[in-house]
Length: 212
Image 1 (spheres, one colour):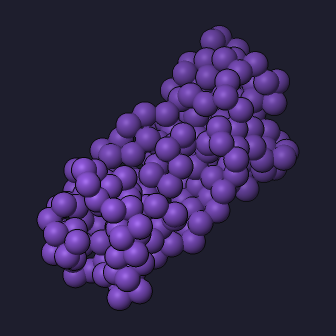
Image 2: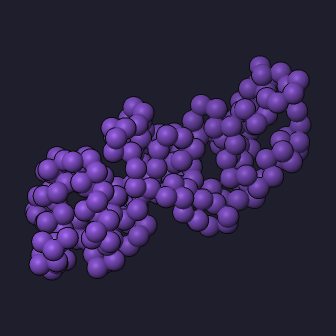
């Protein structure tokens, strides 16, 4: 396969996997050999085994890190500090894109950044949605409420007032308090229910918490 044909096949797809090139009578060994050559020539980037994207100047769309994260592990969604920063709920710049997954924990360093995946149990894998990003890209991202609960759940001592205060949470008035309570009750972890009280204390919402 000529590289020009690859560019034509990929078109404006931000990332692609080898399965896209193995349709029909394609020789898998030859395809992999060509991918290796193009990678060495700097024409493509390898994100992980079997997952690639075109390199500039051949790249038509700059992949959003959240979209890349979704493709690195398909059974995952972006959450924790990455989602909270996206929603403007924490002030710090987050250099690592962090997701949760029902698979094993994983870590990759790529030309598009560092990607961490934290394991979460199957019955806590909910509360995310498909969000529109730049250039017609979309990714599964936790809701603000679920991103905060995921962080509390995975962080030792995450329900403590000291830890939550250190996060310097912003825009807590945007949280759906009824939804965050429902999400916490769904998994039934006392740690999460305690955390909601602490978060309400930080937001000055203590009185409303008792009425829900």
